[in-house]
Image 1 (cartoon, rainbow, N blue to C red):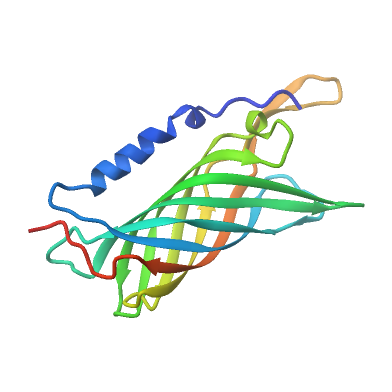
Image 2 (tube, rainbow, N blue to C red):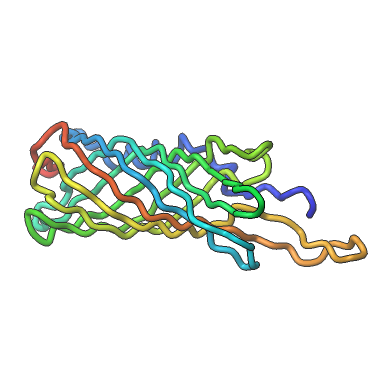
Length: 215
């Protein structure tokens, strides 16, 4: 395996992504409905090649959430911006257990649709920046940026405490490398290992009122 190529998405400064999201969120007449979220992740990776004894791992997620209601005519639709620390990865069992843990700073941008006062569904995207890993030279080996599709639910939405569950389906590979044949020649370029993660957690609303950004 040759030295992995750098994913060009990893070169995009994560601060710009945060700025774009906050600019979209912040309106001169808006206020912030802020909540704290925390929970656990059950994550694994998808691979184009067979990985022996591959198993999921349990990680964590925690951060802050900002929710606002931008549409006067559609009051059951709101937008969620979050800033989360989340751990994903997988493990392989041989004679010993080897875990591969990836710690991300993530920015989910979700559309929340309230079916009732107690239940809502969510969908959107999650932008993630790899900030650390338990693998030696992991930040130089694995791609630093990930993009995932998100779908989830939130229960007891009208209460100060609510619970959520969501699935994040990673779209970008963790590794870019060239396959090498038996003679040492480079063959196909391979883009492989993509995250998939089930998150379950609790949301605590610090400000328990709906905030609208329309007049």
